[in-house]
Amino acid sequence: MRINVSEFFDRILAGIEDEQDIRTLCNLMTSKLITLAPEETQRHLDALSDHYRAVLSFKPKENAVKQELEKAQEASLGILKITRELEKAFPAAESSGDHLKWKGYMDWVRKTFGQQLRTLEAES
Image (cartoon, rainbow, N blue to C red; front, side, top):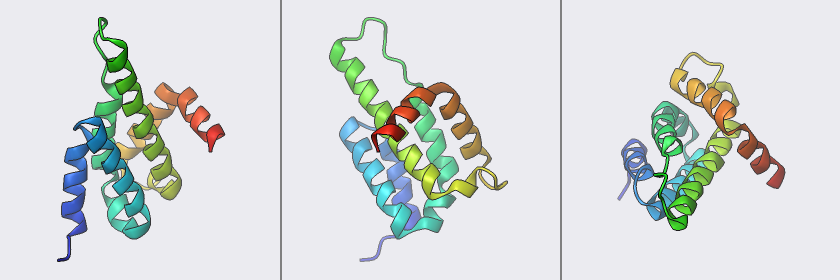
């Protein structure tokens, strides 16, 4: 049975905003698809950026317990890691006129999460 990569990305996109375990699997699959299907992966950058922004924009309630705060932090860290990986795999995507949402997302991520990105870079 052969899976259509575009349909596979539809499932990945749906899973990004799911539970943490599902999101982690989706990030892992996206990471693998960078190598296995780079053109299709690049084609989905705008859609990925919409879903990534939603996860990164999530703010726990003020009365959230420690576990909820850690869960939100873990979700953000996973999204930032895959964002960095996609940025490195497709450096020209921001300058091409084809991925305006991705460019806007990357500008927002650098502005909002610059320190976390620098920390991730230093760790790798």
